[in-house]
Image (cartoon, rainbow, N blue to C red):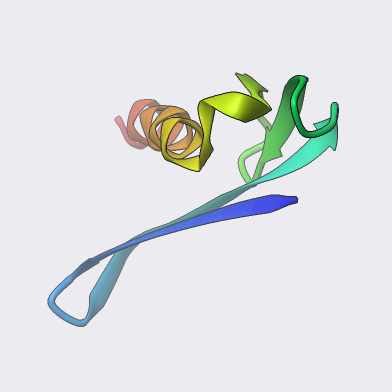
Length: 64
């Protein structure tokens, strides 16, 4: 499973990042590897929106 997050302002993409599940399965805690090499712990049942927020938080910290 992969989660891709793209953020646009008008027609310009300002953020393009992703995470891929590397451990775990639906209904259980999982680990995701990001395109920047970070690992994210996330329970599958918490949903994609919460995973996207974790991914964007890492992206924000990296861009500073």
